Amino acid sequence: MIGMIIRFIVSALVLMLVSFIIPGFNVSGFTGALIAAVIIAILGFIAESLLGDKVSPQSRGLVGFITAAVVIYFAQVCVPARSVTWWGALLACLFSGVRYAFVPTELR
Image (cartoon, rainbow, N blue to C red; front, side, top):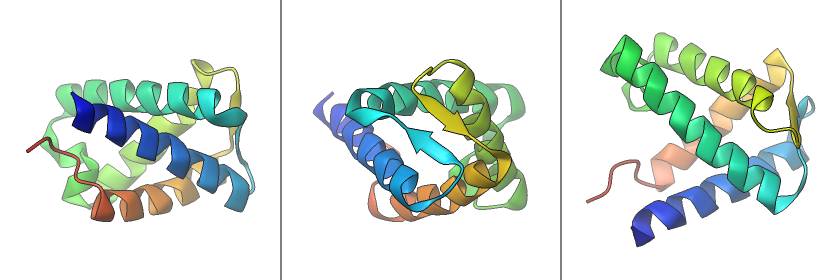
């Protein structure tokens, strides 16, 4: 449980950093970033459940990359404190890949 909370907090901090660096990707405050992290995790789980393991960011394939960008883009519908362009979503996926390299995505 603690590991999951830490992952969401780290994800929210990464979203805030991405919002600061990348044009076309905006998050208003830590609370908005935390809500966005939870929504992105839920949408990612749904996409992986429907489309299979090949769309997970861990597969590091083009399909997984594009699916992650679509999830990040459509998460803005659920989070009013966030706005994302298509380019911003694609660039955020690159930063998300860096996060996956340092923060494990599976609880051990």
